[in-house]
Structure formats: structure tokens, C-alpha cells
Amino acid sequence: MSTNDLSTGKPQRGVQSIEIGGKILTAFVEQGGFLRLKDLSAITGIATGKLHPYLVSFCNTGLLERSELNGYSLGPFSLKLGLVRLRTQDGFRDILRRLPDLAHELGLMISVSMWGPHGVTIVHIERVESLDPINFNSRVGGILFLTMTAAGHVFRAFLPNTVTNAVLEKEFADSESSRRAYYRVDRDTYDATIRLTQDRGYGAATDMPTPGISAVSAPVFDYTGRLLAAVTVFGPTALMSPGEDNRVASRLLEFTTKLSDDLGFKEACLSVADGPADP
Image 1 (tube, rainbow, N blue to C red):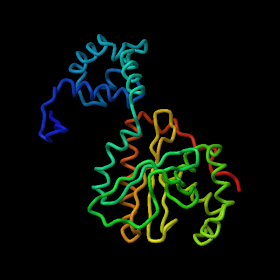
Image 2 (image 1 turned 90 degrees about the vertical axis):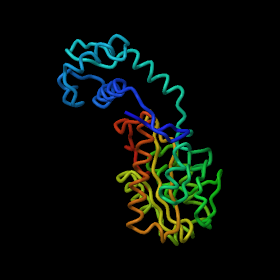
Image 3 (image 1 turned 60 degrees about the vertical axis):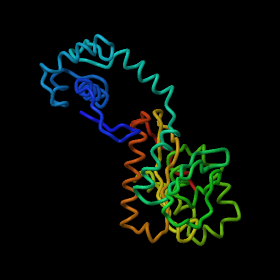
Image 4 (image 1 turned 45 degrees about the vertical axis):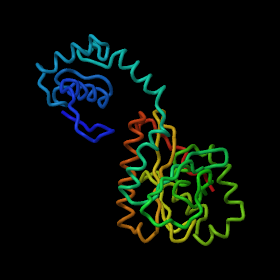
């Protein structure tokens, strides 16, 4: 087995038995932490006779433990490893580390937004140098509309309404009402947009709030199910046509789903039961 050295890109040899052990432990994680030997064999494709020595060693180290239900479950050392990972992980750092590759793959600019005291706040913009500059008013520290941006739709859809209500009401009451009227964003259409965002797992905005610029945005969740950030891909509407938009949205969802999974998120811990606020 081999992988690439991060500094040289050259293949490196690994230890096959450790990688097989990783496959075994992955099966326990994906199946909820408990497995019987025959089920583990079926899932991993490894014969029971070959599995047994691995299970003995894992039990000796505390990664696994024998269960009273005639099977195996994750052990106390697995818990310690998980807790250390949770204490030391930095979700924002992980997003920024992976972002350049996505930006170059898509050939589009990407922003990262988080919820701040004044609402949806841009905290990072990943630019692709080969692209012509896009003429739109976005900068790090800028505040985005909840009502007229793809990232805003994500935060309204996946944060509790109690968090976003005050900002939303201020937007509907402020002087931008004429712009919302131009885009036909009233409360009914907005609530429908948020329900659509929840259903498909990402937000989208076409030609708004800046004509000629369109965007798709997807959420990143942490291990508690909390919305950590929104990753938004944007570019000229001509490059974000319906077919292209679907490709970008699919790749962006793949990217954010992998990020959330690596941060310990499981979809079962996500709740959007309070949904869009009533008009």
C-alpha cells in the first residue's frame, strides 16, 4: 500500500497490516460501534480466521473490547483517541487547508462565511489567479444578506430561527426593500426558498444581490451538529448556467459533506425542526 508524500508528491510505502486494521476499525465506526465476528467478516470481506488475530490485538490495546452480547465494540482507548481529536481539531483551519484545491478544480472563486454578531460574515475569500476579477462587492469582514444570498439561505435554513430572527426582521424592515421587490423576494417566496435549501442541502442565488453574479453555498457542520460555516462558490452567471450550476453544487456538496464527516458530524444529530419562521 502507498500514499503520496505531501512535500514531494512521491509515493510512500505503508504498513499493510495497519491499513487492514484501519479497515476493520472503520467498519465498527460505520456500524455504530458493535459487531459480531461473522458480520464484521461480511462487511470487510476478510475471513474470520484472519480477523481473529487483529481483534485480539485490538482488545489488548483497548481499541476494542469483548461484549457480553457475543461480539466486539469500540474500547476505552478508542474513546481517548476520539476525545483528543475533538479537543485539537480546528474546523476553520481544515476548511482553509482544503479550499485552494477546490477553487482550482472548479476554476471559480470561493468564500467562507460564519455567523457573527451582525449576521452572516465573510471570513475568507479564495481567489483563482487565472480568473479575471469579478466585479462584486464582497470582502473579508463583509456582512451578507440573509434574504438575497446563497450563504444567507444556508444560515437561515440550518441555524435555529431564534439565532437568525432578529437579523432577518431587520432586513425586511430596512431600506433594501426596493431591491428585494426587484428580485421578488417577499416573505412567502423567501420561506419557500429556505425549505428548498433544507431539502436539497445547499443554497443558491441567481443574479442577486449583484446582477450577473450567481452562487451556490453549502453548510459545514461540526460533531455536535452545529453549523460551523458556509462554503460558497460564485462566479459570472454565464458560467453558472443550470447544467453548470448542478455540477458545481454536486461537487461543493461532496466537499462540504466530507469536511463535516471528518469533523465528526452525523446527519442524525441535525435538526431543522423549527424551520422557517412564520410570516
